[in-house]
Image (cartoon, rainbow, N blue to C red; front, side, top):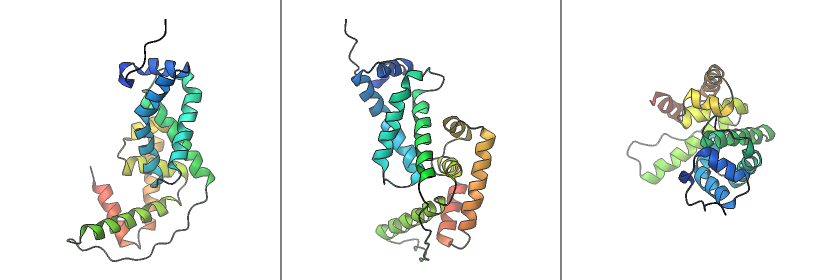
Length: 201
């Protein structure tokens, strides 16, 4: 008797979905991809700050996931398991690339009542400056910093997806903050943005 067609990813628990993916069921694989793609993109984007090479890295994440999904036993959620793979993929990507040159040109702070396009341009420039600074960090510090400070994840969650202790993650974030803040000492626009991030709950 043929297996039930997979209508939605939520119709099966994580272990069953993983089992069906490992068995080569295309419907299950499509469901897993559809269920997890947004989260994978979010993780990669928060760390990289850019959509360059994003599709390649998403594909690399799912190739690795489908290759090893037979080992999934449900110790964590399937979402966390795939997110862990995405974190490894982005770590390898950062480790093998050269950092971009750091060029920060002074621009005026936008007035409080500036037109939206001007404020949006300033926001884009601020993020460009931040990620230019992050390009100078080691991958493990960058990943911990971006997932906590920018994506708002807890220390425990970051520890799970990076297979590190919460103490190690706390130390990485502290060191990354110090390095980023040092870079921002002479950049009022970036310094103000970092202050708003660190003041957020």
